[in-house]
Structures are given as structure tokens and as C-alpha cells.
Image (cartoon, each protein chain N blue to C red):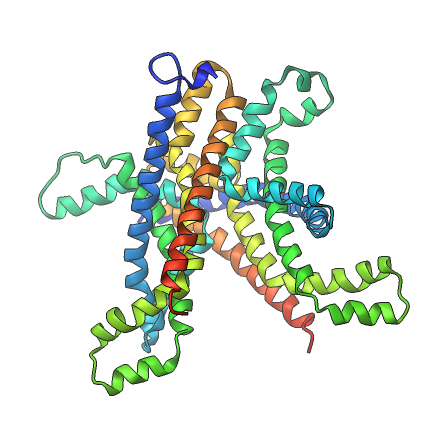
Length: 224
Length: 230
């Protein structure tokens, strides 16, 4: 065991954690809106819209995240037309490509989580709102959405943790996130176990924090 | 389309073999995972605190750390660990483990952590009476687990195990970083030499979708089979 290496690599890995957290928070933020949008489309009665939303979540949940990142980072640059638009400024940056891929990926899972949450809301609650003369719009924003968010907290907590682990794939498109730096240190020192303990410890610590925050929120917003 | 031709002119046959490789790694990893799950599930359910601790440590650490990091650990640390063990037995030559074994074991350990949770959940949802009945009949613990609990548990576990299978299948794409030529690695090679990454990565996505679709269909059949009589 090389404890000196563990101590010297800790600050480097901690600095890289900032990028991991940035990627995570950005993709969760955009992904939540995307997920909500597609969850609403899934509940639409129009068959075409419904199928489209299902297709989106099926494709992004059925393929590895690595493929999705590679298509966006290596693939999209190949389209000549895209290079002439303003989008190119975003798509040539691995940082934004990673965020786009993560957002699309977590959006697909989030849409499934929210859809099932919407579907488990008891019809009586919506009927109660209607009989009180509340407009459909307000029923949706003030009754259905808050209940759905509460319902989906446990599943969404898992999704946050899965996404946090997913951000490690950013290292495959040259970003130096926590896993990227860990790999760099391993390949220069050939001490995989020491680096794994430190980097894995940081990841576990983040998992622990997320887990407990979600648990706290679940308790705070429980129905009882 | 000529890019996908079989033979020397296209990448069709290469991608076909790469797909077989992905299936082979996934299945091997899944079985290694079952082996780990069957070892750690009893630990998690044991009445001894210390054994619980070992079981929980395994599932918590593996499920809380990115798959890629675990793969790097095995990729860079695998041969070192084997050589260390060999040196105890007096063998000092360089040993290289092939990418297939490294990948399958790394993914298998990850898959095993998820399978452990599934098995634990399934066992806990089996009626307590079954355990008691086995006890009353004087069946020993080993037979009780393998002949009474396991068959009932499998039925309950299949839907969740199908999720584990999907995760495992998708995780194998990460082994491409170690150089094992599966779908992802082959697409990377093809994309590099034809300068057409969009086509090959999209095709890889289609292959993965096909694999998940077909395996879902097969698992649904299996599920129907195990639910006969319910």
C-alpha cells in the first residue's frame, strides 16, 4: 500500500470532482425539464405524439450511454451543414457534448419515472379538484405535478446516483473528470488499488450524500 | 450500404463477430454475477452482523462507484494481482490475462451486486410459512435453500433479473476501453478507418437496440414459463 500516493493524489482527484459535479448538476437540471416534457407527451391521447415520446425513451434506455456520447461527439461533427451553424460552437466542445448526451439519457429515464408517477395519482384527487371548480391548468400545475414529484422521489434518487456514475464516461471524450484523472494517475504510477480506493471513496461519499438528501426529502414531503 | 458488406470490402462480418463477442461477454458476466450473488445473498440475509457487513460492503461499494472505474481497476490491476498470488506459489514470470476474462470478471462483479439485491428482495418476499414448513419437515438448510426457496425465488426474481441483464449488456460497451473487440470497439476501429463515425456509432446503437429487444422477448417467454400454475 502506497499511502503517500493516496495522500498526494487526493487533492488532484478532489479538484476533478468539481467537473464531475458540474456535469452532473447541468445534465440533471436540463434532464428534469426534458423528462417532464416527454412524460407529458407520453400521457397525451394522440397516438402519434405518444409513440414518439415512447420511441425516445426506448432508444435512449436501450442503448449504452457510451454509444450516445460517441454519436454526439464524434458523429455529429461529420455533418457538414452543422459545422456552418452556431451549434458548432457547442458541439466542438467535449464538455457540452457530454452534457447533451447525459441530458438526453437522464431525460429518457426521468420521463419514465414521472410518467408512472402521474399514472399512479388516484383519479379521486383530480376529480376532487374538478368538483371544487379548479381549472384544468391549475389542477395540473398545483395538484398533479407536486404529487408526481413526491411519488417519484425514491426512483429519481436512484436515477441521480446512476447519472453520477454515468458522468464517468465523460473521461472517454477527453474530459478530465474524477474518473479521467484517476485513470491518468493509475496509468502513470501503475498503482490501481490505491487510486481506486481514493477515487471510489469520493464517489461513495457523493452517493452517501445524495442518498441521505433524498431520504430527508421523502420524509419531509411524505403524505402522513 | 457497401460499408456493411461481408468479406474484405466491408465491415459486416467484423461487426457480426463483434456482436457475438458482446453476447458472449454479457452471458459470461451474467453467470459470474450469479455466482457472486449466490455467495453474497446468504451473507446479506444471515443473522450474524459481521456477515451482513461483508454482504452490504460488496453491494454498496460496487453500486456506488462508476463501472468504468471498476473496469480500470481490473484492467490495470488484474495481472498485478494474479502475479502477486503466483509469486506466493513460486512463479515469477510475467502473466497477462486476456481482455475477455478481465472484462467478463469486472462486469460480472458489477452485475453480481445488482443480482444480489434482486435475490435478496425475492427471498424476502417468499412466504415465511415456506421456511417454517421446511424446518418442521426437518429439511437441512442446504436442501431448503436449493430445493425449496430457490425455485420459488427464481419466478419472483425474473422480472428484476431482466433489468440486471439489460444493465449488464449495456455495461459491456465499457470494456471497449480495454481493447476487447466487441461492438463498441469494432465500431471505433471502423469509424477510424472509414472516417464515418456517425454511421458506425449509429449502427452500433441499432445493434444494441436489437440485442435488448430480442432478449426482452426471450425473457418474457421465460417469465410466462415460470409463472405456469399461478
